[in-house]
Length: 307
Image 1: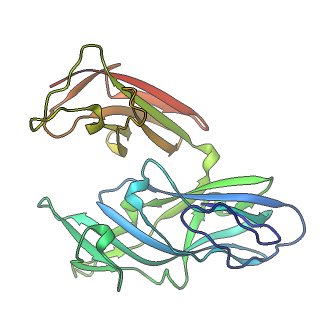
Image 2 (image 1 turned 120 degrees about the vertical axis):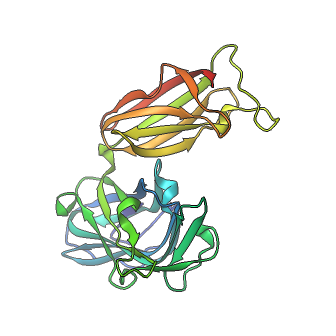
Image 3 (image 1 turned 180 degrees about the horizontal axis):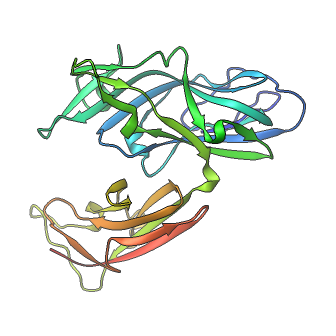
C-alpha cells in the first residue's frame, strides 16, 4: 500500500483502498512519498479473508488517518505477490513509531482432515468469501477499535528522501490458531511485520515444452502447461508459494512470478496436475535459485517428459 501524505492532503492512484480522512503536520521540512503493500507468509489455512477498514500512521505529530475506505483481501492470494492498499499519499518526512491497521472482520477456511473445509468467522462477518457457511466462531480481540500495530524493523519508521515503499507481511501461519479454551473455535492473533520493499527480490519462472515432447491427455482431453504450477520452496520444506503457469501471449512460454522475496536461497520446481505423477525438466528440478536484494532473477525450465 502506498502512502504519500502531502501538506495539502492530496491523494492519487489508490488501488484497493482510497481516501485520506485527515492529515496532521509533523513540523517543517520536506515530504516523503510512502508506499505500503500487503502480502502474507505461507501457512496451512485454505482461506484467510480480512477487512481492513482504516490505516493510520502514528508519530510525534499525532495520528495520520491514511484511509478509511474498507479493503477486503484473501491473504492466501498474496503469497507470491502483494496488494496495494493505499498509494501515493504524501506524508511529512520524519520519524514515525507505528503503522496501524483497524480490522473490522475476518473469516478463515481450514482443512477439516476429511478433504473438506470448515469456516470460522468473527461476529457478523460474511463467510461467503471463505467458501460457504460458518461452522464456528473466529475470535478477534478489539482490533476494530484499538487497531493492530504493525511491527517495523528497528521499531521505527524513518521517512527521508522523496519516496519510501514498505512491504507489510501478514503471517497467516502464526496469526490463526485453535481456541485454547476447547470450544472448537479459532482465535486471530495477527503477526504482522513491515520492512523496506527495496530489500526484496523476485523470481520470474519461464517454462516451455521441449522439442517433440507431448503431454498425456487427462480425462480424454488435451493437457497443456497451463494446468501445471511453479513451486518455490525455501529450506527443507517451507513452501513460499504455488503459482499456476500462464501464457498470456500464447507464445508457448508459460510463466509464473514470485515477488517480494527476502534475499536467500530457494529451490524452484514444476508441479503437474492430478493424473500426472511427475515431470522431468532441463535443468533438473528442484533448481537452486539465490535471490539477492533488489534482483529480479529469471529461471528458464524446459519440460522434457512426464511420468
